[in-house]
Image (cartoon, rainbow, N blue to C red; front, side, top):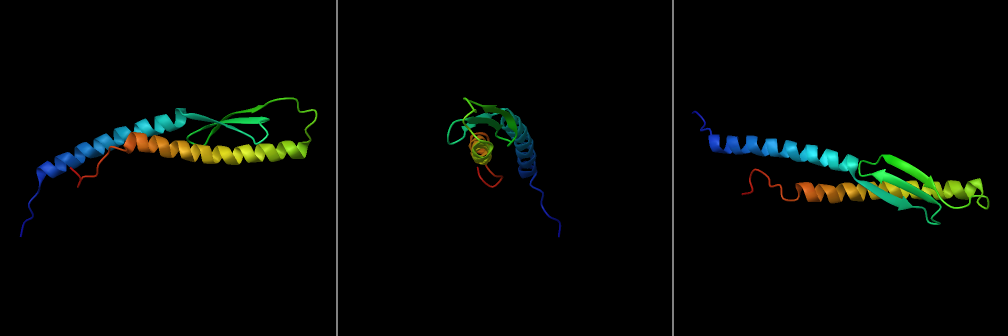
Amino acid sequence: MPREIDETWIDEAIERYRRLDVLRAEFDKAVAAHVVTVHSPDDTVEVLVTAAGDIADVRIRGDLRQTNATELAREVQAVVTNAKEAARWAREKLHDEIFGAFRTVGER
């Protein structure tokens, strides 16, 4: 028994795949370009991180003469940990913005 081919459904699926491909490219570009700034608890370390999780810059602020290496290391670790979470949050927000209106094939 031959199966009927729903060519309209196939055409719609192909178009949706193409649209999804465009959205993925937009998302990848946005994730690489979007930068979030995170500060250490004592505000001596500032990290700029992309939504992709890449650290774009690290800035040490203030006078470090009164800060010992252990304290500075603790601040760096805290800000890097927070930067990882900030990147995840930014990715989720960008994903919602870009893919939020995208429907599955079954939705019309």
